[in-house]
Image (cartoon, rainbow, N blue to C red; front, side, top):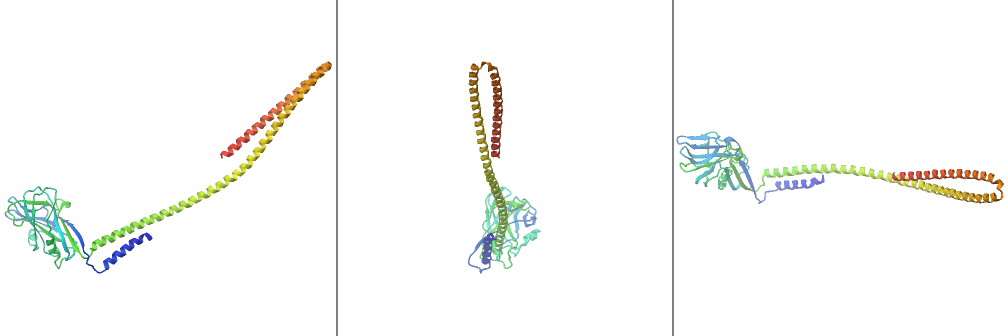
Length: 369
């Protein structure tokens, strides 16, 4: 499909760039992780007599609280860290969700576990005996409000020490320690643990710089382009199907136009035939009109003859009084014959008039069709 060519071209260019020698360009990438299991965070503290440890506590804490919660420390394990070995860490922050309202100022510290890939927490000894990074960051915390997210200072030096290890590999796990190991007085800060709320568990944000574009991002781009190509292919298929439907519609329209042409031809033929019939009708009407005029002339002539006969009869009656009776009888017969002739001619006129109306009705009816 022609419309897929731009997508294929973009993919080809992208693959060419990835396979070309590395340049001096660098890319800043964000890696974000959250505690994802109950045993991936823990809380330890000294109760005045012994050390306590829990992976199911509802909070991770730092500082001290009264006389039974001293030297509180917490560990948080973040798995599948997508940071390559030796990457330059631009910045890194730990985000904690406050679970209590706490006032005053608490000084805590943040370290990392100095191993290639950290494991989940099991016991207090497992927590205590882990190697810590030589670098640490101090976090001076003012008052916290319950239900708010708090961001640590930049801990990039701690993260840098871990990813610089020769055994570090992208995708390994990383542990962050947060606490006040020597605190025996003062306040505390408490944040939600995984067991308190999975969505409010500790988060780690790492921004690093690399000269190689991240493979995960490249895969995302390729997947996105592939998805777009698939969607575009579906759209092209839909357009092709629509074009076929339009083609069928055009064919149907052509058939309708052809039928209209045939009907128009029939109408023209009907017009010509109708025009012939109309001419015939006009001819018949003219003939009928002439016959009616002839009948009127005949009636007029008959009346003239009658008047002439009456005059002659009157003249003869004066001279031939003897023959008056006979003449009156003849006059009566003549009058009867004239009356019969007038009746006959009147009926003929009525019949012709009816015929004329019928012909006009037929003409109008055919014209409406």
